[in-house]
Image 1 (cartoon, rainbow, N blue to C red):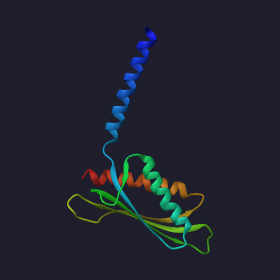
Image 2 (image 1 turned 90 degrees about the vertical axis):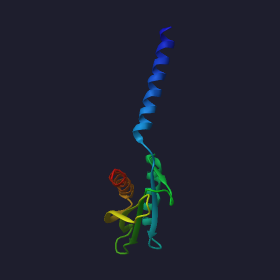
Image 3 (image 1 turned 135 degrees about the vertical axis):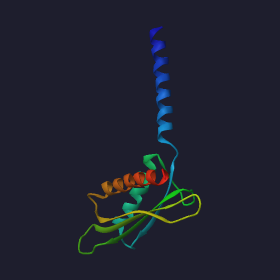
Length: 139
C-alpha cells in the first residue's frame, strides 16, 4: 500500500511542478534573426546558425518573421584576412511592437569571433536577447 501511495504522491508532485514551470516560463517571445554576413565568411555563417540553434534550445523563443511584438536580431560579419579563422561581428537588436511602430532600437554589440569562442558568443547573444525582450515587453 505504501509503495502505491508514494508513487501517486510523487506523480502528483511532478505534475504540479511541471504546471508551475510552464506558467513561470510565460508565453514565447517572437524573434527573427537576419543574416547579413559577408560572402565567404564561414565563421559568421556559423555564428548565425549557432544563434538560431540556441534560440530554439532555450524554449522561450519562437523564430518567426511575422509575429509581433518581435525582437529582431541583425547579425553582420566580415572576415579578417590578416587573422585566419577570425571575423568581426556586429549585432543590432531592434523591436517591432503590436501597433506597427518600429523598428525600435534596443541595443548594439561589436566584437571578434573565432572558432574557440563562437559557441560562447552565440550563448551571450541569446542571453542578451532574453534580457532585452523582457525589458521591452514589460513596458
